[in-house]
Image 1: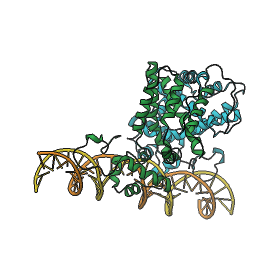
Image 2: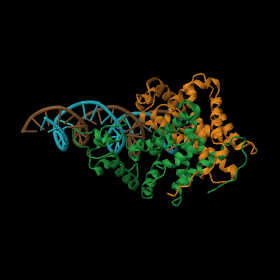
Image 3: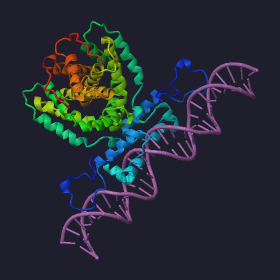
Image 4: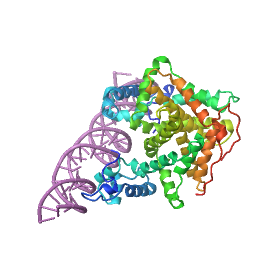
Length: 214
Length: 214
DNA sequence: CTTCCGTTTGGCACTGAGTGCCATTACGCT
DNA sequence: AGCGTAATGGCACTCAGTGCCAAACGGAAG
């Protein structure tokens, strides 16, 4: 279901007909249409036609129309895992998490407009907001597994899961601000979001904190 | 779209044909079918038939099949708002939030099995997990608005939004544990989830990391 | 009781996403 | 050229969701 054909490892393919396109290419085409025409106003027929393939084939590359808005997320998740694995265990947990989230969201300058357009859709179109939750779950799980490994507890237990949620929430809150302000710096916002968490959920009783309104 | 007919204020209805059922009743019927037969295996025709109404009418009471799994959430949200409004402003923010979340999830013992069945679906069925995100957004917004009011900042700004996310995440993490353990106490788990946050994001280690330059 | 008015109902037909089936096409290899 | 393999895409189907509209209903006035 997740991995259909046309996505076998490049080296593993020897026999048979060549795939007519790629998941990344379809994502590009779909994103273009979604951005210009609107998500609901774009049919899967439109996308297939724009990509020069049959509608039936489209659904072999992507499990759903919503899924097209996402690129190769699994690939990026691998990067996140690797980054976490390479962090020194002496680094305090919050700092490790902050660092991982920031690195995960570091993109080359020339990709930023593209990334912004995608995130604009993902965080704006109701159908995509809803669908994205399923992708986020995998992201949260990576965080949870890191916490679990680090503290030698079950990844499915309360603490890793709650922390996974908190990190996701901080990220999305930062993204919303980023999308609202063309000039804003995504990575700064991400760090600020984590500072919000540390400031709010401080260990002792909560002392009044200074505000940073926007 | 959100409020269709059949949901006008009870006192406000004088004229015209009587509604054949209610949103709550349909939710009950649908939940029953979803639980026994499975969500994907239940068609909207099935639900309409079980409720003794036409399929067309079903969609006048509920915007979507997924929405049926939710009860009158807007009503409960009002309760959450009220509770937050009545909290003493001297109460530290974390404690206020914890208290609100706990009160929001307090149910009479005899409703617990029903509530559990519903949450089991909402947190297990992919289509419902996805759809629920849209409902959660309203919940987060209530939290964000409270924080914003309390600190005299914009509800749409980073801090209230991030806190809203964190509270939602803590709640959902607690719910997952609750569903996994028949014996567990939901309110205890909720409080524990908030303790996780306070323990993890303690003020001390909020040191700025290396700066980036993207 | 009848008429009128406003509301809900539900049938019908339609769009569009997603899927199973399967013949066809294209590629690499011998 | 022929073979095996894998991708393609057409066709038909299910099902969610919607616009349209005539019929059913319930209260109030005549």
